[in-house]
Each structure stands twice: as structure tokens, then as C-alpha cells.
Image (cartoon, rainbow, N blue to C red):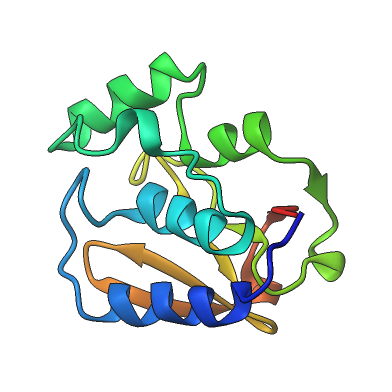
Length: 138
């Protein structure tokens, strides 16, 4: 269920991540997605593991503790899937499926026709049409 004022809180999350440098466990794609969920619904799915990892290996341990090996797999455990065309502002999307070059994959926040993702180069925007899957936040 989306809570009143979620749109403004979601904008604030995007603006905050625009100004942050990537840091595992502090500002990464998992935490961007969790902060978006918190803005939209009020609950924080990352609360149990915030600040518990500081590198890629630690992120992998957190994912495994949540019965996932990748960021998209974690979303699939936590949120119902939906067709990309049905995804609305505040939902989550898979920007890039895991690969040998990127074992975690990339996830982001649907903002309409674009999706905001976060990685080593900071906040980036891609077309929703370039994403592979979507998940309903509320």
C-alpha cells in the first residue's frame, strides 16, 4: 500500500543519491531500491542488513542470507512480478540481468518511462524499455 506523500519522498531519495558516491553498504543499488520502497510504502526492507557490509563479498553474504545470489533474485523473493508495461512510478525493475561481468545484476526504480539505477558511476537513468523485468512495490 502506498502511503500519502510518497511521490515527494521518492523524489527526495533520487536527489539524495544524485549527490552520493557509490559505496557498498552505504550507497549501492540494493539500498537505493530499499530507500525507494521505504519512500513509497513506509517500511524498510534493508533495515536488517544496513551497514552490515562494506564490499562486494559482504554484499554477496547478505544476498545469500536472504536466499538470493543476485539483486534481481532478491526482488523476485520480496515483490510480486508484473509486466514491464504495467510498472508504474515507484515500482522496481531489473536494468541488467546477472552475467559473468556483473554477477549481481542491476536493479532500479521506475520513474515513468525511465528507470533510475545506481552503481559505481553513480546514479544513472535508462529507458524502461531496456529493462528485463519489473516488480510491484505497492
